[in-house]
Length: 579
Image (cartoon, rainbow, N blue to C red; front, side, top):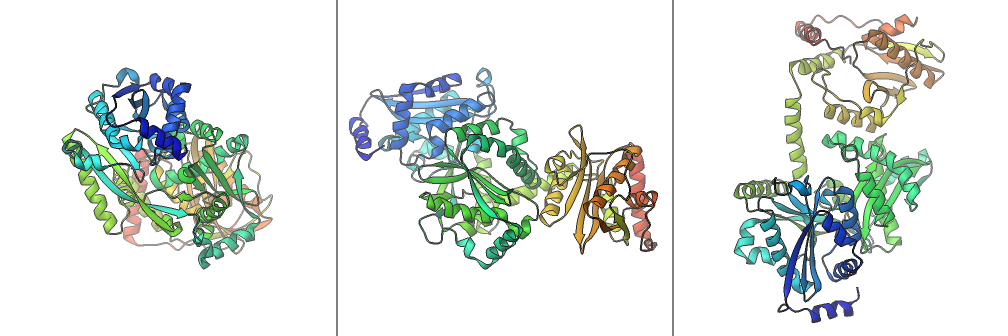
């Protein structure tokens, strides 16, 4: 919207004019957003609002409401003066349908929920504070027991009404957050590429083949890439946070496809010899690119190449060529974002509630977060460590502890070496094993009987892949049945770890034979190192003999005692979990 049109609106609408406010819920919200006359008015309002972001754009909020209306209840508050639209507050009541909207105390938050990095209201600037006070008053009257949150309020959002009014000051908790940005007009917009460390990483990538940042502009191409990208994302998210966003939220793909169709997404993929190494799917609008879609990178040898960071630097150069103004790295106090950023500004988090106990909890949380940040500790990291501690405490038992101790002790035993040749052995029963299949790894369920939780398993798998190990997996009926981890050195292969859970001994033997056959077929001849007694027995059955002596017996009483206890636990639980 041009300046003249904005001035016309503000001239014709004065604070003394007749004011009305209306709250809509459910299907009525979507019907309003699809009304051509309202579309014109809200689009004009969006252009006139200096603090609006792409997340308040009509196309964005309509797409989100339509995709998620069966899960969350759309709510929209609109304000008018003399028939002119002067304010819109698009929010959502989480995990609620129209029929039970007054039966729970679920949180109300900005339309887009976690998909929208910035949540705020649209308003003509002269009405910015009056509208939000009236809109929130209407919202609290309709939903008195539901807390309201905005994460995050963008810069320039009017907030004086919070501190100037006793009621709103008592109801509200405002928290300041630093936001890392890359200002693309500055010479250091891709500063990381100039560092010696990342030049070395880039050179390593180039030794693998052609390194190319590939934009995705075709909807069909985006759809075809999306499945692979979401597997990369869910694998990493599962390893770090014990969550699988796309698996747990099946309609999220549908939402992203709609955003792409509406040209609100900016998608790039870093490829090496045509293979995906990293991707950034971001939200674009008003000259900004926000990292609020999702980013992912391949875990394979990631610590050697840092493909994610390299992608961000390549992307910054590309965005400058496209004459974008800012790359928004989004709040979160991540160290890698500070490495990339060349400036910071500030955003706010706002929580509003009439419930005294809820406000006390939020104020305590705010105080703790401020102390952590002051101490140089990322709040999310501290919270994650605490969650993981209680998760492991809940999902562990004495058998789990003993198993880990026993496994550690067994890892110190001497290894045997077998000479494998192609066509060494062909198993009678073929099992479909997959190499480095992330989808298979995410099928691991875990239990107290298996000795390792799902969170631990995925975190360990990511670490192994990042450091160069590879795996063979076997899955059936949407469950991971086996996983064998290997490392290579000097043209030799070493079995690092083995997971198997079944009561079928015939399947167990077939798996061992198929595993050895797959490893043997990798090269015409190779040395195979292992100290796993089950694999060693399979080798002997196949007629292969070790080139080293069996491990020396260890008479340490404590070690033997722990191993005996572990065997007793295995016997009582009936588990055949082997590692």
